[in-house]
Each structure stands twice: as structure tokens, then as C-alpha cells.
Amino acid sequence: MNKLKAILIFSFAICWVQLQAQDKTISLYEGAAPGSEGWKHKEAEMYSDLFKTQVVYNVTDPSLLLYKPKGKANKTSIIIAPGGGFQSLSINREGKDLAKELAKKGITAFVLKYRLLETKSNDPAREMMANLKDRKQFDKKTAPIKEMAGNDIKTAISYIREHAKELGIDPQKLGVIGFSAGASVILESVFHSEEETLPNFAASIYGGPSNDILEADMPASEIPLFISAASDDQLGLAPRSIDLYNKWLPSGYPVELHVYANGGHGFGMGTQGLPVDTWYKRFEDWLLQFEFLNKQ
Image 1 (cartoon, rainbow, N blue to C red):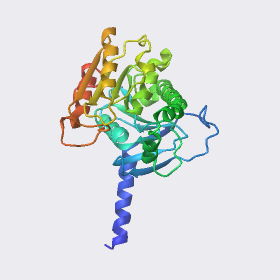
Image 2 (cartoon, rainbow, N blue to C red; image 1 turned 30 degrees about the vertical axis):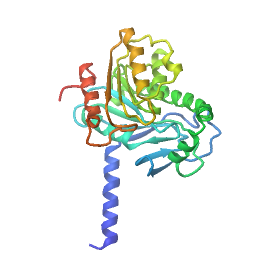
Image 3 (cartoon, helix red, strand yellow; image 1 turned 30 degrees about the horizontal axis):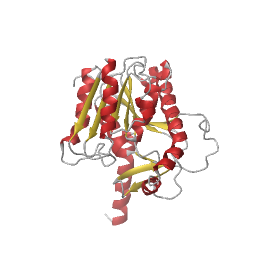
Image 4 (cartoon, rainbow, N blue to C red; image 1 turned 180 degrees about the vertical axis):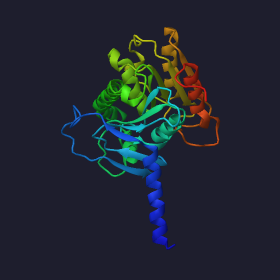
């Protein structure tokens, strides 16, 4: 076999595996998304050598990547919101990799590609780090994006519930999980939602909830919450996870917190040879406890 033929076969195999893993892409809006109709930039994807993972940026057409259950479905669905500082999405380590794991357990998983701050260079990670040098200005720029992303996840919840029958899911067994900035996105659906867009359970992974979230009234429905973070988070966000736990606890709503000694920010579904590598197993235990997951 010559070298070119081998490369073509390998490339085809990779594409086939990716197509098998992801079942469908669902656009959340017909036409331009409300509030960003004038956006002209184009969605792109790259490997970030700074973040050491694949990232998506310049999302203008919010969508859901659907991962159907493998084997017996349990009617639970989970929307996954990757992080990336509202500048990019850590699409594999905080999105697709978890979706595939949940699908193996019988859960219908969706990776949410929500709207982001425009990247003007071809390196969203480095551009974000540069923007963070003026945190006040960065927060001002991202404020409208956070609102749009919050609308995107609420639209996603509405879509899934409206299409529950064809998706084979229970509309009252719909959860959300977010990483870093994605945790802020999922909390928008928890705290700033009408009843029809409230999730049934939620998970915040190394999130940094704003004071606005931490001071908001608790949701009317008793939403169980799972929280995980690492003490050595480079962004210093571990205390924010503890603050979120302390907000839930007095309400009597179910809440579980895991803070690992090491793991840093952005551990996601990565492997570091540390106890934090198994955080998602603790999440699965939690789902089992609340009957959102069936015993295998």
C-alpha cells in the first residue's frame, strides 16, 4: 500500500468514527439568532496549543450536537455547555467526550454550541488571555454575550421538551451541565428562567458564578445540583464553587460538592493521573442516586 492511499484510508476511518459518534446537528433558530442578526463572522475550529485541546470559536448559529444513547435508553437527557471564557468552546474535553460517555450509559446527550465573543485573530485562546488583562473591559464586552448564551440554552431546553417524543426522552428528566464559562451559561437557565425552561437538575464544573447569580432568589422548583472543582484552580475559582454550594444548602435543595486537591482549571475529561480524573464517575453516581441513570 502506498503512503497516499494509507493516509486516505486513515482519514476516511476517522471521519466515519466521528459520524458514528455524533448523530445529528440541530440548529436552535430559523434564520439568524435574535440579537445577533448583524453578525458576519464565520464559525471556525482549531487545535489550541495554549489550551491543549480542540476549540470552536466565532459561533453565530447556535446549535445542539446530538449523541443518542448506545444500548438501552433511560429517557434522561443532558445538555452540555463547554467552557472557553465566552471566546471559544473546549468542544472535545468539555463537550463531545462527556457526551459519548453519557450516551454509553443510556443518556441522550447534547453539546451546546452557544454564541461567543467575536475572535478577530485566528487564535481565540490567546486573544482571550490578552483581553483578560483589562478584566473590567472584558466583563463589559462579554455581558451581552452571556445574555445571548443564556437565551441559547433556554431555547435548547424548549426545543428538547417540545420534541421529547421523537427524541425518546422524558421532558421532566432533562438536566444541564456546564464547565467554566459554560457553568455560567447553565446557571442562567436555573436562575433566570420561566417554568418551561427550568432544567430538572444541574451540574457546575469549575464554574465562577457571578455575584448576580449568587445573590439571585433560588429557583421555585427543587433542582438538585452537583458541583466539582480543584483547589489549585489557576483562575482562583474554587471558592466560587463553595459559595454556590453554600447558596444551595440552606434552601434544603439537594446539593453535592467535590473539591479535589489538584487538577487545575479546565480538567474536563482529560487524564492527569490524579483523583480528579474520575470526577465524572462521581457525577454518574449522583445521577444514579437521583434516578436519572439506571444501574448497568
